[in-house]
Image 1 (cartoon, rainbow, N blue to C red):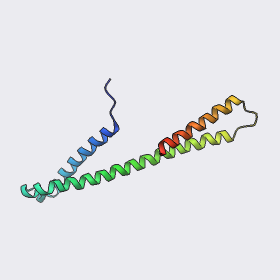
Image 2: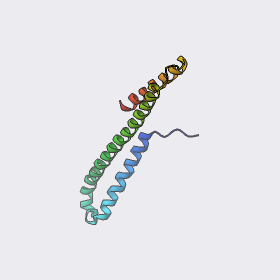
Image 3: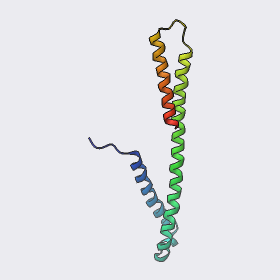
Image 4: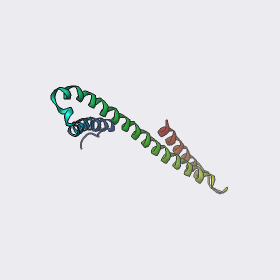
Length: 115
């Protein structure tokens, strides 16, 4: 089995391909930019513009992903605490400790994803 693909490598590859595609697309849509001397000047500028836009999309995606992960972890923690507070008084010590550890682990996950 092959080596696991790092998500950062995948994002960097997608951004590189996106920049190339974006520049080619703009040169296709604006044919006057594709003339030899103008292309020599315009291509680096277009590359910088497309790269900046892709960096903003990447940052937006990171923020949205963080919000979803944090929301999911917070919901898991709230559910664990609600289960803990909804217990009867005659619960065994082992069961109480298990549920308390579950709530503590949920809290650790929340902090891990939100920090």
